[in-house]
Length: 276
Image (cartoon, rainbow, N blue to C red; front, side):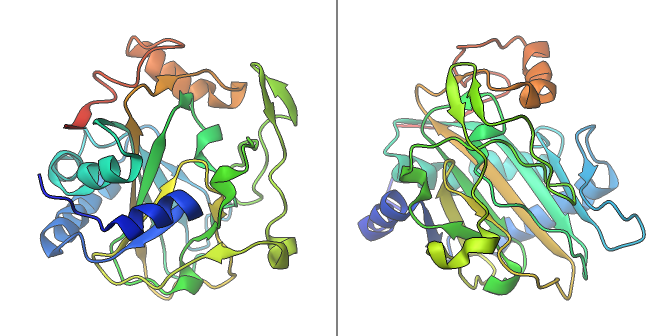
């Protein structure tokens, strides 16, 4: 199979923790995801949540682990270019799906994601990347910003909830043998960090390391409804590793499907998307 990415993009991903990849998803795949969104919004999973507290305000919605519920999402996960791109970025012989998320933010919504890194949120450990794919053109002021190089800090930060107020789960300290810290206050110390943020056209995407800090940097509200599809993907030898009690709900789902601490990210919930 032909190489999709130039070496410079792979180097940028490794050095910076996030990379803009332009034009790899044609209208077929974007339209496929739009059809999936219609079905997903009308029939969400039990994990569906509204992060906006004021029910009279424009809302910010999220759902996850829906790839096997929505045929269009399933098609994208298995047949779009994304697993091959992930294999090139991670220098992987095998890529397994970890989970999908979809986000829907209504026009005028003031809710936005906190600065966080994905590695702390779930019981996963290994070399993993994340696809962030908007279905509409994005100006950087309405998108996500990534903290350049933060994937190399060798730190774990506590999980911050996406709900308005951005409450933190747990307390800093040693949890299950690993040290967790409070996420630095990025928004109050913007001058201390270098940010990666881009304007994206339809078909563009960002891939980032699962350890890279990212979140909403600006106060702007979208002028129209926006849709974001994300995938987390893992290189071979990634495993389930229990984190704090904050992950207990997601852990329960995995345990119901027969997974336990130390198991490989493979099988029914984590299917193989690419194998070299």
